[in-house]
Amino acid sequence: GLKTARMSRLVSSAELAAHATNESCWIVIHGDVYDVTDFHHPGGNDRLFERGGRDASAAFDAIGHSMHATKHMQALRVGQLAPSPDAAAASTSHLPPALAAPRLTHADLPAAASASLDRAEGGGIAASSGRPPPTVPQTSHLP
Image (cartoon, rainbow, N blue to C red; front, top):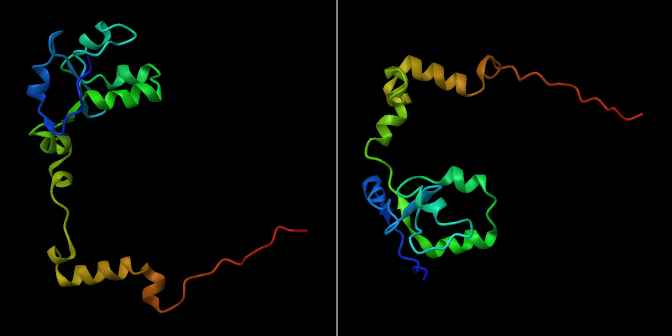
């Protein structure tokens, strides 16, 4: 029979990997973890079991699943896959150190640079010159 929906919780990668057998099969689809152990897939359970303990999003998306199937999945949902502990570090590890560093704010700048930046953000040269910005004449394309 189908398992009933449980309260949402975070599932670690290690816990997910422990459910990669025909006796206990969990898969991930778009970040959500589903217990498909007792689900009878119309295309055959081998399609589920061969992806046990892993992300099956690409395989799920490649097959057109009905709204009924998508709704039915909610009863099988265990929770959400937790981000890996080093996900934050990995997301910026490919960047040069200067780009991976925290962004500077006005408070981090010397007063002269901060004032110059304020002028630039306030409208650039036209705004600081005292002249109004140039206007583009409106033309009509009607006969």
